[in-house]
Length: 342
Ligand code: AMP
Image (cartoon, rainbow, N blue to C red; front, side):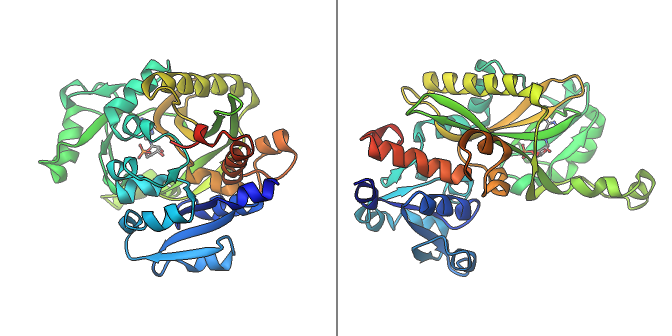
């Protein structure tokens, strides 16, 4: 009975970012799967045998023209970060194919100012923003919007330092000056179920960023000798972390507060499914959040076989990809699919 109900649907996603995990999870839950791949990028999906069908496209934006075909196949699309970066949030908002998640939350996540309002209203601690370089009174990180994955960010300690380092970017007004929090970066992976109203922590990761994560291998003396070694934050991978257990109550509360606030902003459904708070933890045990991702993050990829936290809860391998498929499956079996599509 449940097999027949599930067999009416196919799970699909774009072949990049966390597609291996999403598709493997969907197959493990009994769905047939489709990967929509840029030509030349299909080999991993064949090698790891996660897709029952591979659709090849020239450009990620071609997903928009594929929609009628996907609708005929009764596809449920699982979004990940590449949808927004390669197709753009307005186009994603307009997708007609069944979509796991609430598209109403995308505008809150995609606009830096709206995102900040959301996080502030949720009561989270955020790095201070400086509206003008004249106000810089502490270490800051200068982030350019749309900077390709953290390239071109720079650190500054004063207005003078800012003006010197800003020279190559003169004319570019699309940046923020954010207090640089000295601590350790940590990405908290959550999953909120609209079916059971339960919030879970799925795991944690830290990003492995080039070149900032290797600057420590070059002594300060040699960095000066090499002259222009500016830090960049280009992500190349993710490393798993287990957090000090006493942080968990606070982190769970932070996640719940973000979900509750989202129900007011993108009512009535708010944010559901996987999401991530991107944080820096200080020696004073403060947790500063500098960004939210309102969907699966690549930092969950180390946990295809489950994380310590999902092992505690499920006693079976449970990745975030599989958790998404489980939620869809439960929704289908209980005739509540509308609760997880948006
Ligand atoms: P983002 O592009 O905003 O995700 O930032 C890239 C990287 O810069 C993060 O992974 C952190 O390592 C670091 N970072 C971003 N914002 C801050 C901040 N306010 N304080 C300290 N580190 C930060």
